[in-house]
Image (cartoon, rainbow, N blue to C red; front, side):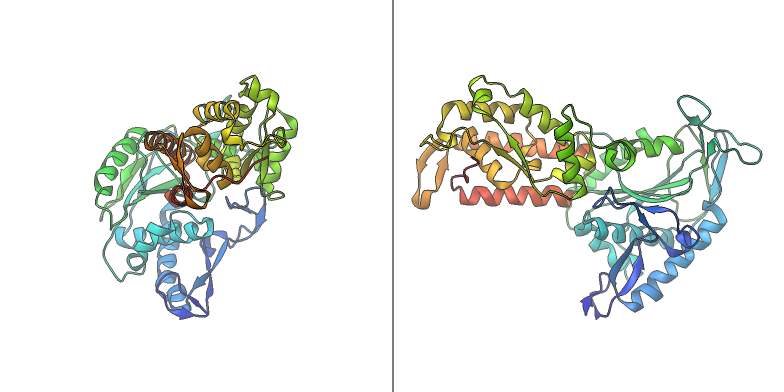
Length: 437
C-alpha cells in the first residue's frame, strides 16, 4: 500500500503513463528519454506507479480522454512556414491536463515536485486555484535539404528530407535571463504544438513579481507565442522556430546519448565523465599535485572542472560527486588547509570555478571552506570559528556559482535547494574537513 500521489489515499497503486497511452499506442518502437538515465534507450511507455485507481481511471482518465480529442481535432496538423494553424480548447480542462502531465514527469525526474504537488487538487478538478499560466506556439517542419536545416514551407506529398515535428516531450524551460526563480517553467511538446507552463508557488508572494518578469522575457524570446484563452479559437502563426532547432540544444546537452560521448581535451578524463554519466562510477577523484601547488598552476584543475559543467548530462552526473585529492602531502604533519601554498591554490581554483558547491562532495566543500576563510579560533570538539567576512564572501560566491549552473542547464529549484541545505548543514557543524589526501 502507498499514498496516492494525487489524493493521498492509502491505496494499491495503479500504473499511470507519463506520456498518454493514446499517443504511444502505435509508437512502440519509439525511444523514451529519461534524464535520470540519459544513455538508456528505453522502448515503450514511461510509467509511474503511485496513483490510486479512482484518480487514474476516473478523474485523470477523463482529462486524457479530453486531450486525445483535442489531439485528433487540432494537434496532429503539421505547421508550415508562413501559414497559420487553429486551436480551440476548454482552458480549464486542458490546463488541468498539462498540469497532470508535468506533475507526472516531475516525479519521474525528481524535479519541480515540491511546487507542482500544490496543484494536485486543481488537476483533479477539486479546486479552481492555483491556476498556472500557459502559452502556446507552433513548431514549423524542418527542411533538411538546406545547410543548415531551415523551416519548411508546405510540400505536396511526402519527402524524406522534410520532417514535421512528431514527438511528445516534457522539458524544463527557462528564457535566458539573470533572474534565478523557483517559478516552475516547463514546456510540453505535442507534435507541432508547444505549450509553455508557468506555475508559481502559491505560498510564496514574491513569485508574482518574478512571474511578470519571466513572462515578459518569454514573450520577447518567442513573440509568436499566445496565451491560452479562456474560450474561443486561437490562430497561431508558423514562424522560423522549426523542429531541428528545438532538438539541437537537447542533443548538445546529451552527447553520450546522441554523439560520441562527453567532450574533453583529455581522452582519459572523457572516459571518466562517461562512467559517471552511465552510472558505472559514483565518485570522481580530481588529483592535484605538489608540483602544481608550488607552481600556482591551476590550469589543469580548472579545465577539468569546466568540462564537468560543459553539458547538462555531465553536470547532473557529476553533481556532488567530485572529490579533490592529493597524496603529495601525506608526510606533512599539517592539515592541508594549514599549508599556505595549498590554501592559495584552492583559493585560486574557487575564484576560477565558483560553482564547486554544485559539483563537489561535502569533504571537498569543507576543504574549500577551510582554505578560503581565515580561522578565528578553535572551539570544542575540533570545531572551527571562521572569520565572518570571509565566510560571507565565500557563501555569496559559492551560491552565485551554484545559481548560474542550475540556471544555465534549467535544473529545477528542488536540486538547488537541496544543495544549499547540504552546504548550510556543513556550516552548522563547522568541523574541520575530512582530509582529502
